[in-house]
Amino acid sequence: MSGATVEFGPGGDVQIDAEALAGRLGLSQAALREGMRDGTITSRVERGQGTDAGRTRLTVFTAAKRLRLVVDAGGHVLQSEVADFGDRPLPPSMRRA
Image (cartoon, rainbow, N blue to C red; front, side):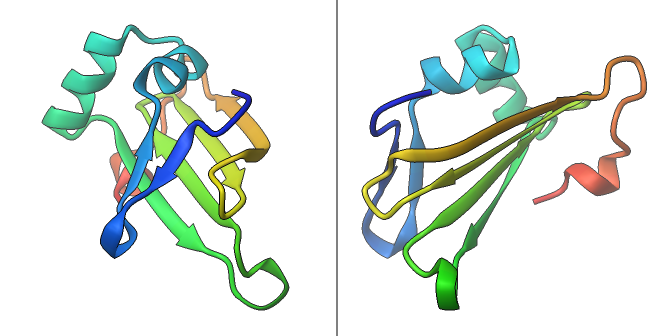
């Protein structure tokens, strides 16, 4: 993921480019949207404070993967990490937003 793939809307809403997100998770866009609708794909947004002010950490969870992005105030990805847990899926309690 390069460039500004994350946008911040009014009220702190976060939008991520669906094509780029699905690609990083190894999913089709349709599977991504379906998982978000049915709750099998969840996310968490954490805003930086202190020395991390202006940065946002976005974490997206599927049953077996975790994608973590750190972005600046302009939506540019500073760090990107995917953890694939393979056949040992994350328990649902760890995937809740």
